[in-house]
Length: 282
Image (cartoon, rainbow, N blue to C red; front, side):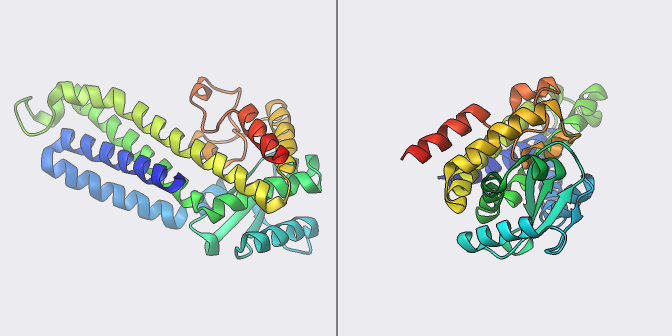
């Protein structure tokens, strides 16, 4: 079901991008938008992990430097039947973590110094199991592609706004394409639609990764307890995160910082904890 929903939402994002291209330039605009989407998807497929890790100054760590971290992830990877991912530490006191990479054989898991200092071994197992759940489901690639296409939609919508201001690049309303009214409507509605679709993808991924984290760690309460701590401490020690990568983290790093949190990339933390505790009771 998760795969079907994700494919549906990614399809909607692509259709939205093509629609904007049609309004901007008719059939030629569709072709340009389609090529643009292919280029953006290719770039996100191969380079999203390197971009995300460098953005947060993550440094790779080895078994000698972080023995406990390596021990936990190795054990979880064996349970999940996954290759051992590369491990990174983010130099931030804000507790959080994310996974990145284009697939199980090219995955990386990054944990902040704050999370390593705050969580005990069992809670770390829950958090890292959650991240390996993303790897197992290939959610990292899906989320990166969704973010990239949504970003492309917003860029092209901005172009539509300027096209409307300057008369639709010299075209009249009767010419091929959507005309000035169509351009204005797209410029306003497309970014909102793209954001809502991306959020739907992200929230679906988080619930599924929570289930995987509970399974791989062996106890749903490990992750439930970790989420309670992460949520409380990340509010008092916020992470200097970019909105474009907020969906990657286990808890929303932007919570309490901007009005955009009305449209959160994550399900309510209370609901996630409630579901995990119900799993533990069962």
